Length: 380
Image (tube, rainbow, N blue to C red; front, side, top):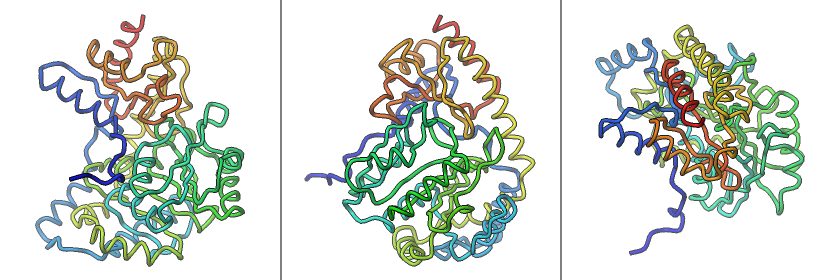
């Protein structure tokens, strides 16, 4: 029996690194986890209390495919309170994590054979989900000159026609953000050229030079993907949301009904409380800032002095070409020799990624300081 060509996608390398790190720990070795992009903190206390209440009081049956009305209304309130933007509740779709949102958005917006541009480096799930759906990811090289983000110029230079553009701000793996004028230029380009724009905003709330601006302040034609995983510290709850243009709403609803039925009911009930836990969540971001500043200071002292601007998220994307042009081997040796787990850049960039490594600073400050100390000794 043969498998489908759609299933022939690349592995998510960071998960392979995490597996190797876990094996080292199981064998008695110590590991400093700077590989996986997830908060080291649990969900906020209010979320845990709401989940306990739902377990004891709620039948936890299916919900509407678009999500429970109370959560959709609360997300709409979030846009009013945080961004000053009015988003109709009917356009909000609760999803099974951001991954479910990307799947729904891609299928609703693009036919097989469509071509969707992504800036390189990129979150590997973008490329792999698109490829699994027979949608062609068109990679736009994006280096330091554009702060590792695509531009209207790189879109215009892309060979062949395009059907869509996917951008992230703050981005994974670089942490860079699109400011208002840069985002406006992409919005205008997509409108003029009839490209469907999808914006990944899952790292909103985790920024270091002022809040991120939602693309919804510029247009109501974009698909926006967000999640409870990052700022809200709820990775394993598999809860996210989309804001969908009117012309795609019914298609997304029918797809959600058939593919997922609904997002996890327990997570939806608990997620309602997340928006009332700002003090605890902002304390997490304050710790990320300390970790970020520590690594931005200490990594250059270890010889890693070419770093992407870490405007948001909890990653530092480091140029390691001074030491190697084989980032997978570099990361294997770093884990084996000093117990520091990090992700090779080839997970995010097939062209230049062999010379880059991503460090996640979502863990404890103590772990970041110890990792920096070990790297300085190792790389010297």
